[in-house]
Image 1 (cartoon, one colour):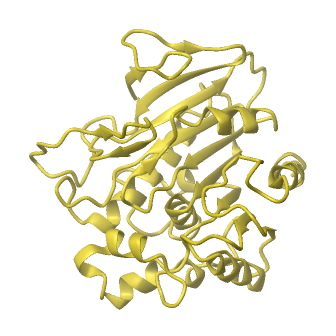
Image 2 (cartoon, one colour):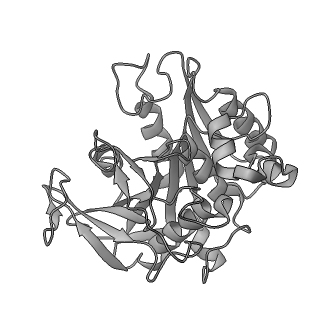
Length: 311
């Protein structure tokens, strides 16, 4: 793996500095050893970051922001976190996932990797609908391949996603036989749990998120086979991992019924699923406790203890 940037504590990019704080270190690491597959031969666009330092676009070199807890004595659980952005951008946040890393470190995790994936941007990539999942698969495989050196228990790797990132995380959980990244072994896509926040799930009416649907499929949006493939409520099996879902009924971006559709299918296949319904929170509540009607992370902590640590 190639370390492309090393980050200062406040996540300002500085050459030659590795970020340390009281209990973790963080690196940005390219997930493809060489050039990323399905990039166009010539790319003239530079990666951009918005004025708020939150949203990446025009990504041609996907990477993970790797948070590793310090002073780890034995392998522990790890999480691949996939941010949302409606397949129009990757909304990692100004802190590059620091808040999420701290949350999961407090739950006993050793490693949190935040994925900056390529978007279905036809100026940069070919076969646009394949590219985000290709990068997500490679990122998950990267955790498996580095489990020993990163103190990861391979039996306790999980995925988490929000919004369109939730669609990618659910794709990892249900489409392991599709769009395999070059050289990936089936066991390198294994994960034991999934956490989805306000996820995009369906590409069919009446509850699909039009932006994610049209951006991912592009000129193949009328392809019924692809529409069915990426409507993940249709792809659930008994092998879908135990899942935690949180959503708000006042979400005006992604209809909350996406979560209900997915939870219903998981239950039908006998897989454990826990849902937390918020009456207030909208689409972007994240860890902001001021905008929600209850602290959903308390439910998450209980679920992690039962699903991850006690198994």
